[in-house]
Image (cartoon, rainbow, N blue to C red; front, side, top):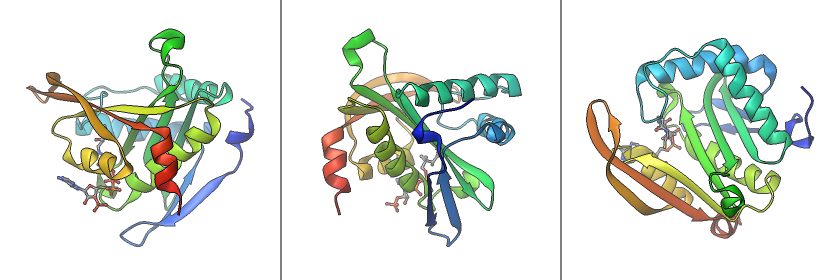
Length: 200
Ligand SMILES: CC(C)(COP(=O)(O)OP(=O)(O)OC[C@H]1O[C@@H](n2cnc3c(N)ncnc32)[C@H](O)[C@@H]1OP(=O)(O)O)[C@@H](O)C(=O)NCCC(=O)NCCS
């Protein structure tokens, strides 16, 4: 599948807090197997994401990657991958929300995950900044970025607050996680706030 400018060889390199060289780039079809293994490892971990305890097939992951490319081509989303020593260690996306038809076209949904052994090394923060920056550049008209986070997920909440997100809503017991009802938190950030915070 061919694509627009945002699928070119743009990359971003940085050093993690543990001194490893990391590379952030757009996905390619060649990443399909690595992506399938990645999501299955997270699914087995049963962590704070919606996919858990289920085996994702290569076919299903192919559908996901097809959607990712379509969203990028139609300027409705951006997904980036992070690699350390050629190993896929993080995936993050920024997608236009079309939940309420054209009523919330100006809102993007943000999501991120980092492989367990690579957490707390600054990868999440770096990925999030680049994905939101690329998202605001390539998905026109976005004014608000939103996300949902599980109430217990203090690491993610800390990361999101550091990025400029703030909590605007909470459904007590809205998530069933490991046989316990925990809060479903809604956080949001104005695009203008992110742009202002990113100015050096
Ligand atoms: C949330 C997640 C993406 C963060 O990625 P990461 O690479 O670990 O993030 P970073 O290393 O950039 O930042 C983590 C921050 O949390 C802090 N932290 C770690 N554990 C914490 C805790 N229990 N409470 C509060 N803060 C904590 C770290 O100190 C660090 O902050 P600092 O940079 O100010 O020191 C990652 O933990 C993850 O993938 N978790 C599982 C999936 C998930 O929860 N996804 C988000 C769904 S909403």
